[in-house]
Structures are given as structure tokens and as C-alpha cells.
Length: 273
Image (cartoon, rainbow, N blue to C red):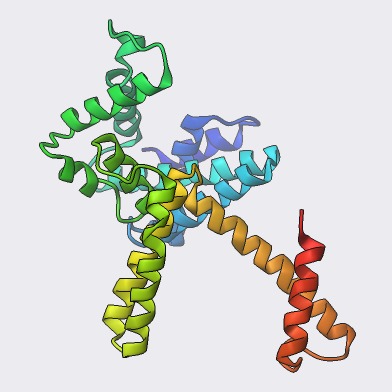
């Protein structure tokens, strides 16, 4: 690549597109480009992709179109960054990435690009799963479960594993039957905690969380989203408690437990929808 020519052409533009983004990243990674960008590897910018994805999700949750537009750009930058690193390593380039996803979309939509009939979303998803299993050469249902990435947040992964198992008839009948496991798992978790066995306690609390996720899933609740909202509610209520403590001239820490309990109930009333 003629870096100087590329820089000149980019500076002459007032509007930019996808190809320009790729060109800019190539310039940044080229000799004489940006020292920081040139030092990066797939591993070193792994966390950046994760953080940008969560910021994108925040934009979606906020319903903020300007934020969504900006964060989509940041995620796209990460895709291009990784692709240019791979290109320089002689592995693949952004064209290969685009080509692969285009082929995947065509193959997994035979009801659009082929002669398969699918009149509803359920049929589309069933076809998608079957084609995915075939193209990934997965011979067993266990292989399908193992393919659910471990990088997902644990609640999200648990919900996805449960949803896949349900398609094979391996699940609780309904949320009520799933919820019957919760008291049992809670008892076992508390017994493990009382025993002082750290590994057993971790295991049993994991079982308890999985039982809650299963009940939530079968009740039609997204466990990850539910916990996200619960966290936000907790912060809002804590803020109210802190205000009430400060109004009495004390910090939260210095406020008597009985008062904090009283303020918490008041905070619940104030933040109730």
C-alpha cells in the first residue's frame, strides 16, 4: 500500500464510507503510522471489543439513536481493526470476513434464497438450527451445547443452554416445576456455606443460580435483563437511603441498622412504579 497516497486521498475527502475506514486502519498500522495501533494484537484489544459491545447495548437500552449510531461505529472499528491485523499476519482480510458472513446468510436462509418454505419465525429458527448443526459438523446434541460460547455472561449462557435443551424435550414442564428446585438448591447452598467448604459452597450456589435462571426462562423472563434492571433499581434505592442518612447528618455507614432498614422501606415506596 502507498501510505502517503492513501493519506492524501483520505484528507481530500469530506465524506467517508466503509472502504475509507479500512484504508484508515491500514494507514494507522503501516510503518510510520500510529505507534499504539501498530503495537496491538488480537489479544491486546480483546477487552476493547467487549467494552464497545456493552456500550452499544447501553445505547440500544437507552433508545438513543445518536448514541446507537456512535457505538455501532465503535464496534465496527473493532471488527476492522482485527481484520487488518489478520491481513498483515497473512491470515485473512476484511473481504474474507464479509464474504464468509454473506455466504452464511444465504445458506441459512433457504426459504429466501432457495426452495424451502417457511411461513413463520418458528420454522425459520428450526431450519437455522438444523443448518447450523450440519455446517458445523456437529454430530450430537452435546456438541451443540458445547458450542455455546463460554465468553457469554454466565446468566445469558445458562438461559441459552436451557433453551436449546428444551428443543430436544429435556427440560422442566413449566416455570412452576422449575421453581420447585429453588428451595432445595437454596438449602444445599446454605448447608455448604455452614460447612466452611469453599468449593462446595461455590458449586451449590451455582446450582441455585441455575435453578433460578431455569424458572425465569420458563416464565418468559430474560434472566440477564432482569438482573440488569434489578441492579439499577438497587442503585436508585440506595441513592434514596443515602439522601435520608445525609439529611440526618450521617453517612450510610454511620447510620444505625434500624434506621437503614426504615430508610430502605421508604426508598422502596419512593421508587415503586
